[in-house]
Amino acid sequence: MKRKTARISAFTLAVILCLGGGLCIWKWDTWFHNPPELPYATPHSPDRIILSLGEDARTERTVAWRCDTFLQAARVEYYALPDSNMPAVEPLYTADATGTVVPSRAGKSAFYQARLGQLESGHAYRYRVCCGNTHSGWHDFRIPPAHDTLDFLYIGDVQDKTDGNTGQFFHLLREAYPGTAFWAFAGDIIERPTDAYWSYWFSSMDGIPASVPILAATGNHEYLKGLPKTLDTRWTHTFVNPGNGPQGFEGQTYYIDFPDLRYIVIDTDGIQGPVSLWRHRNWLKAVLEDNPKKWTIIMMHHPVHSVRSGRDNYYVRWTFRPLFERYGVQLVLQGHDHGYSRITTKTAEGEKTVPVYVVSSSSPKTYRIGFDPIHDRLGANLQLYQHIRITGDTLHYESRTYDHQLYDDLLITSSGTVIDRAGDIPEQLDYPFGNSPEEREKARAYEQEKNARQGR
Image (cartoon, rainbow, N blue to C red; front, side):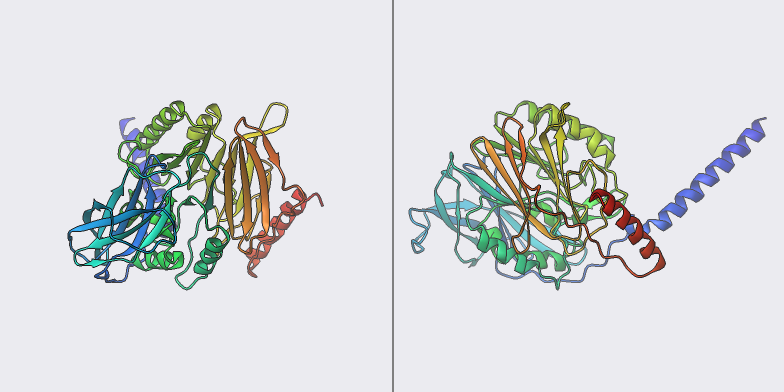
């Protein structure tokens, strides 16, 4: 009997190992393969200058940059501007910087950061970064007034090739929205964690991060694949966020307070087991319970309800959605799926209320979407951005195409009422399929689902 049991156990183990090995071979590129990183050189003068927000967005900014491959004395020189057209004068304040040499797979860079505190709402400032005997040019930024309209841009996955057109897109956004308080990115701003893709993102931004604070979440494409995945260290030294997150996720999961808004960012890519998931759940519960703000917005990479066909981030939905609903989160901004979805929560009477869940992407790479009826609004094969404006008790949400055509339009009140103003805007659901037999079969099934949604 014992021998029979041992044989069964051995056979079962062999089957499990074979199946596991086969799965690893099948999913090798998805789970483990990282494309090689080409050698790169870090310039001898400051570059990749970027503004981040402190925990109190009314009074704090952090400036980060890189310069050469070894540490030097570094600082930020800055002064207040009574008029934004005032010419440069001798700096009134100096903030010493701390530095870290950050290695990657193909090179290294010295990254620096300096905190600018005791800033005043409604004031403009001019600054430059200094490293050794070199310094940058002067850059300006403004602290939004304490009791005024707050507006910002939300951008889903960028994830472009290094010869793409993202720079043209960002240039159009800067011209169309010159006064935004910050730009928010929900992860996957780069295709893979190599310096070539970081260089492309910064060149596409064309100096915008030096004047407009960037608020970022991690995406899976900022992580190096493996067991476990590891976040590219350049991310943590580029986006210097508040260290108020759960243990082990300081600067990756965090929140920022504006006068009427608490903006919470969750690193869903770094949650790789029950311990980190439990820490995030407890941290989020505490941050939402002790929240004096009128408005609460969540930003994270993985959607509560996926719009890409075949995906399901069940751990995100089961862990976080009950907290979003219990504590009245108004808006959840998400990426990852390279399609568009907007979902409003429904009351028992069927009325639309909060939370409102949005998935969006600005990447030229698009995925086939699914047609679950939970999605109030869908979009396929689109590159979009979102302009969000909060004025008093009203949040105005707009989603637009690259050429600024309106695609979605909502009004949300702080009490939870949602007014859908996109009823007359047709959904874009066409998706390009290939010509192989398999692709043609997928296209037929997709067309049937699309026609059913459109009531044909």
